[in-house]
Length: 472
Image 1 (cartoon, rainbow, N blue to C red):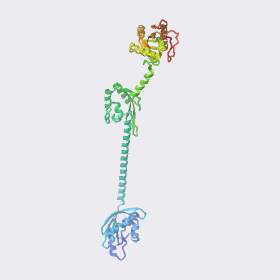
Image 2 (image 1 turned 90 degrees about the vertical axis):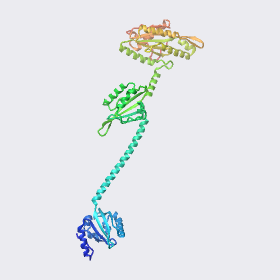
Image 3 (image 1 turned 135 degrees about the vertical axis):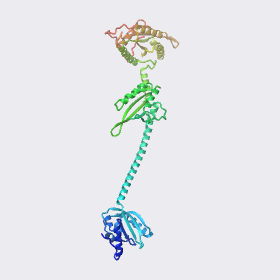
Image 4 (image 1 turned 180 degrees about the horizontal axis):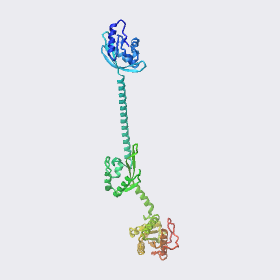
């Protein structure tokens, strides 16, 4: 398509046509006042408007320049004309189909007061720039998100660490390379480390080396660790162990899986110092099994120990002796001087008899003024000698209440497993039978049961939870 020269300017038309053929960009000439005089045919390939369309337009800026860029373009063209200085800037042309087409424009003033425009198509470059800008923006957004996540993650870790450091459970995490990834302060305290110790990054060997230093049974604990690690269970059973200083602790562990494949990434250990709980439990058991007045084991503990010792003697094929005794003359003291005097008798009696019995012999207060003594491996002769010592010890005790002298004596019944009985209730009945005989024969003495274990007749025994009542 040929250019459209102004009428009466043939020489200019030839020059402009020559220019149009020699360049690939869009070239245009503006008259003073920004009226379009001429534009190269290449405008059609760029925008879809012909050169004739452009020259015929009442306002070439309205026709060719994208709406958002018109004010800026017109102002810049006016500046070039006014200041007579060249300007270059990018803008968007408007295509016939409404598209925006990016061009790089160069504006130069002409001697006649008009302007010359050269516009180079840069759509591909701008699209590349936009893509790069979008990519950079996305990268920056992702980086900002990562930083935000890192900050949040760090905050979460700090909050979690603060929380874990406040609890009394010791926490230790060992990774699959057997290195410490995390531990809290309670773990250090339980294992006796200084509070500023840092084990993170250390191999688990440092913990195994710690065991012989602080544990009462390091070999047993290390064997437990070995079994736990080799076992296939994801959560281990609770294990109780003791420290050399007397503290008691428990541990449990769990395999930790991570990632989409759920592979093992380490093992989490939880430690708890249960010293106070165990001691409290033992104290409660002790209170439940001890006579409040004398401190001796009570009736309940007597029946537990009797059953345990009988089972042990049965397995080993050994003997077990039982001495059942009560006090002669105790009821008159209670009646004459009151229960406080009776309590004093019982307390002193328990203290004196405690010095008489040996370590493997266990003394019980069954109730009231009734007592029992269990003697492992007791022969008949040895049991008789022990019974006579008890009788002599009790008989030698003297009391004074309200200025009046008082004394008690003891009657003792002796029975033996398996000679006199083969089970607990029968053994108690045999000892009671002998005790009654000692009383009937004059008191202040001991008597040996004459029953045989295979006798079918059984003497009625008292309820094991209720003390028997005997006349003094």
